[in-house]
Length: 295
Image (cartoon, rainbow, N blue to C red):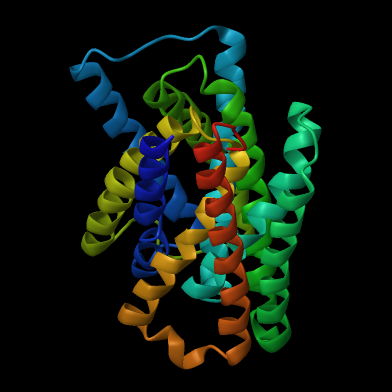
């Protein structure tokens, strides 16, 4: 369990860079995600082929993984949309709603019993978002997009929990992101019609940030998180993901000086969110010492 938590926190730390890198890239959110997944799929395929790790999966499971990948792609689109309409700090903080969404959705989707303490911790995270929303209403569109992004992440995390027990993490990632690039490619003509843009190709600096985003924040981070998911629950994973704002917001403060534009309500809300994460980690560690499992 300890090794799984270390891998999970390492993945979340890498994900903390995604917001900052996303803002550095000049493409709109749809094209940004399309290029990110394209680079990731090609790189991962070459890596797995060279290492002899390519595996085939049954057709039914392959379609399931494609579907989960579509959710991942949409999740990233809404995430970067939240950054464009608000900022990195707001988009990352919205991920704190993952605790409540998972506490409610996981029992419904997996027949697991409702756990009142998990719902309570999730509500604490939502209370933190409410404080931010209340004191910073001009970020309302970005917050709504961020909440949709988080809901999608909770759904695909729960679905991944069902897949990870009998599929290698890198194989899952390759099939899922292949489904994601397929969905975005089919939807791209309609997306560009609805949200026209003059810039279709990345700049030279965009390419550099896209490769970092794909190799470190996608391939490495997702591989670590999927390995961790073999040992921990979807709830623990999604609540731990709430630490992503900690790393990402610190980076946003340093790189973009976003602390100048945030009110006291943001810091109050963020304190509630961080408290919920700490309490859940304490529950996991305590259960480990007692020889029980609430992971």
